[in-house]
Length: 313
Image (cartoon, rainbow, N blue to C red; front, side, top):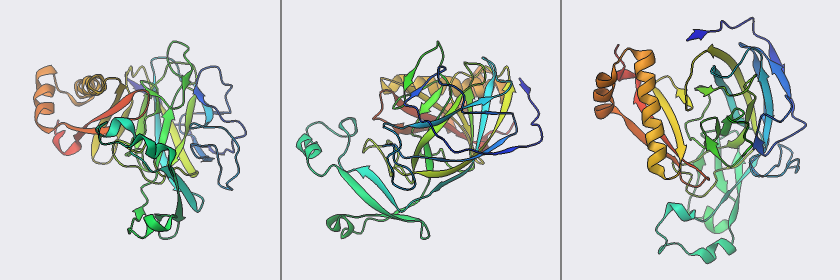
């Protein structure tokens, strides 16, 4: 792999005027940026409402972008560093009923979907907590601390596909990974010239599995920077944190998502950390961790994770 040295950083202030409900090569670039550049922007919520509570787009998950990264070509790796993710209004919303795939069918009351399905949450940006606005729910002492994240980070998909923004895949997209938080580095395979990066779907917090079918949906202030690895040839989204390396695999059934994530993690260990097939297998067999990311989207997502403390080579 050849890492493209970052040029002198340019900071772009970007305000979206168009929003998209597909990840696609066909959308015209909203902004052209270079490796090393930083973007300061805002995202709207999954239903299309902005920081002023104005309806500016239709859901689900309207995206801002695409951001055209100069020099990115198919076979490269786009590196996205999430530098700031911060809620920027005083309310959020979520569903109130467990999603069908998250519980035993015999337990679910499907008529509950016709009852009060959506809860509006009061968001305290100073205390960094959210509380349900319905008195009966608030009386139960429910108070959720912030852990802001982006549900969607993706590039234009392969094979000239246009993929609905509810869907994750090898291109990233609606991954809904609760670990997509401020400070992480996201690596995505490039399938189109310029990569065409999209972001959106901010969550003030989301639990593992996204078992409501959504999270604390809210608009966000976002800052990110980009970099480029030439010829990286990765196949699935990778994430690096201060403490771990992580691969996200998406498919149905869930087992196939697990297989994608496991295979890509082993490729990473062999390519970048000096292990061979047997050595990486032994390491994974004893320290690999899985996280059930979400079980509600058209494809399910699994995270395969290894703490960096075990990467001693």
